[in-house]
Length: 181
Image 1 (spheres, rainbow, N blue to C red):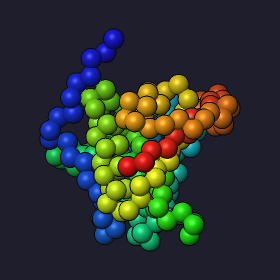
Image 2: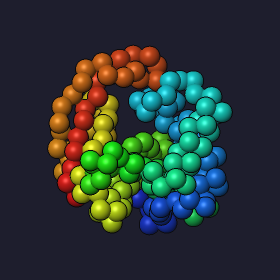
Image 3: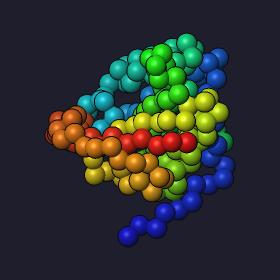
């Protein structure tokens, strides 16, 4: 059994402003590539070209600028991005009270230190502040993230077998969760 090492207090979790999203693109692309290379089922296949990773984050940055999503990052004092999570706030007009938690990523070298818990707590706090008390998310069935969400009080809605592909092309189920914050 691995004993978690606490996240060093020097790692900060913060919201990225619309005016600074462009400054984060390279670090976010590195993070995404690391996670996909490590086998994370986060919408991309391996190998993940750097240009594709950058294009994805450019789209996220545009969503932040349009106030359709909120981007949080976890970074070291030197600015290296070790984790991220998004809150997608652009919802249909009959769902102004909810948001989707998306693309929570933690660099492999920063895992098992509580960073994902900190990111999740931070995105839940942001959702409360934005007046979004109902949150939803999905994750690969059977992975570490699924256990994290359960421990954090998220309620499982159900599992869809063979919903997505892992980066290596194998099928994986997806578990859907919700939480009132």
